[in-house]
Length: 436
Image (cartoon, rainbow, N blue to C red; front, side, top):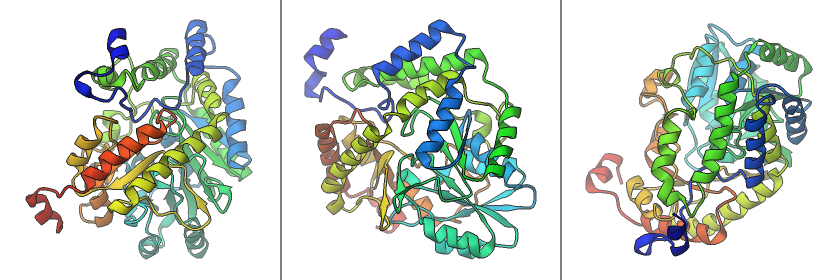
């Protein structure tokens, strides 16, 4: 393998191929992970959780942050703390992940799906206003891909109808609206540090709020959540170590198959259970974050400014190269600052784009469904045709890596490949189907 790396990739291929994830960790994080595995005692319990929560709350500019095993658990805890339950409705923007709809349904409430805008893939607030009923209790305001949604419009809708605004910041750690971090505007917000996000503890979630009473309720819920088993905490740490190695740009062309197998099978846990894909509640939903994961996330949180500066520079390269082609960068409202976890593009022929980008990077496919990872959208409670713009996005979106392993010259090559693909006409059958 070393000889292959020295010689470069075979057949004239580029020597570097970018993975979509694994780019937020460092060899220092790996050393810390190895120490945790060797010591074992600090895997589940320890002081890192409290330190991480304090640092996270400070970063968002709120008084309280409460950690959980997943972002979906944080959302579920927030909805419970707000008193959302049977008979209530929660407005949920699409496209999103099935676990967001599931968290609403686990409370006994009904998710009411709201279409997105075609220029940003964020919620269409006009459509949201049309869907408000006397049973509407909350709106989940998703900042899709890290582009701030219409915060002011959502807050006004909430004031007008007495609706709680819960910010979905799983893509958007570090994004800002009017100089303030997203996550500090709604009654509460939730974040994810799952392996595909801005920072990674391989799995993890955080709920934040400035409301002391709501925070106390979240603390009570956290206390009732079970700690992760020691073996599971160890597997999360092992996954971080493995992915850091397997996603090295000069290795990834050779290790991609192994990487995918590890992502699907034991001993490394995957992000979504089969039950969740079917819209069912998993047996062990309510879990806390481990000390080991908190320590690794805290290390990365301290590097967040450099991480974000890099992502913005790479996004700027994509925007300069791809804006005139027709996919364009996502629309950003005045006074907002995006923190793109990935760079999304709307393409006419997704398969052609993936093939063209493939020699240089693994192209992301958020979203392949209006409810990502659901066995079918119906499993999450969605009726086909309800949100046509989101359905179109689920057919046409590809997204490009922005993480710290993407060099400027990588971004130039990826953008050139994407631009070439975006000029390719889709097959005749697809053009007729989609009205192109």
